[in-house]
Length: 119
Image (cartoon, rainbow, N blue to C red; front, side, top):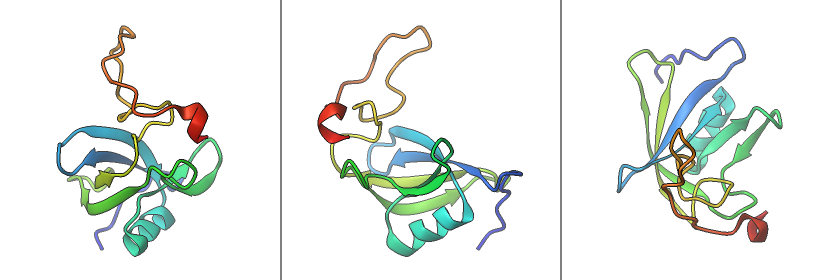
């Protein structure tokens, strides 16, 4: 495996992209354990900084991410997860992508599911 440049907290950003459409779905952080779990299971695992724990994407919502490939940037300090997104979307707010609004606040994405019904 390539040497990865985890930060002082043992974290590395991971961009998640739909492997068919190229749409950027989310950005999260991973630890060595999260990367290993992702490789082992084929499902995206991340590290929740707010909960301070490893988590499998979709464990609660059912909107899992099947990882088809993991790419490493030139500096070894960012990963790209290429995924097939199951369920309505990747964002916990109910949108397909976490990048559903502009800097001015205009909503440019569509709701994919009702988070009240999922969480």
